[in-house]
Amino acid sequence: MASADRPKYQVYVDDNFHYMDESERYLAGVYDDCQTARGRCREIVDRSLVNEYKQGMSARELLDRYKSFSNDPWISSSDEQCTFSAWSYAEQRCKEICGGEQ
Image (cartoon, rainbow, N blue to C red):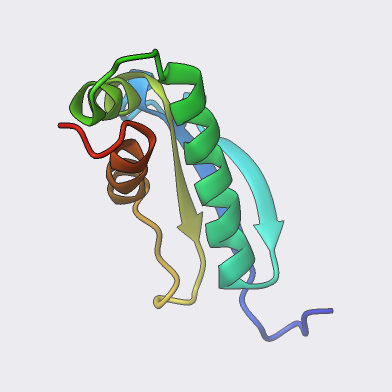
């Protein structure tokens, strides 16, 4: 159990299709540690990539679809060391999913 003085880690999700529209944002969960919050962010990105992937897509095509239409999770916390870049993670995963093809 987290003590009251430890930061909480809130995972928010923005919609890449509705860029900068905070009304499309939602809270995906509140976590007691950074590792768990990052794990939740990775799950959200992975699910988005699976939903966008079509057989034969290149990594670049999949990343472009992700950046245009998918969920963009991020972490809000007073812990400045706890960050997550959904786009960087998605770029890495697209290469893995598509076999490294550009």
